Image (cartoon, rainbow, N blue to C red; front, top):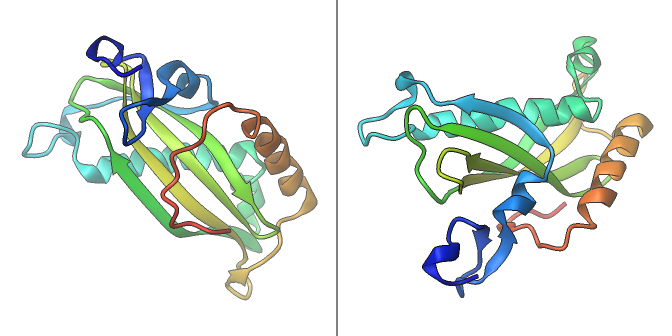
Length: 180
């Protein structure tokens, strides 16, 4: 897909303007958050302010964590948590007030203490990829405030997701700045 008529069928383009992943492939990823953008999210440029991108990605991220056992109950006792080590947002198309977005996620990799995941914010009103969020998260022992191995039940859930995501036929457009 490279001509203008296909611009809304492709979700991710490479530098040569070839389609890496169709929009349908992004929509098929697990959905973690939806939101119709309210007027108070608008900035002086007439589109959603950058702070709300992070907020929406954070909300979706918490749901991604919960889906893998890293939920409020897990964190409640204060022994373990997670820390964000790196994150990157890339913007591709503006989001305006009244438009709806959906955030889907894909796991890129993991170690015994960390995982690397990516979220895709789709503007469902315009049928475009609006932004991506890529992050490196570490599991932490909150008693000593240091990275710690994840328990087996968390690892098992992440491994199930990773095995599924590794079957996808398209490469995630990672920044290259994150190493597990």
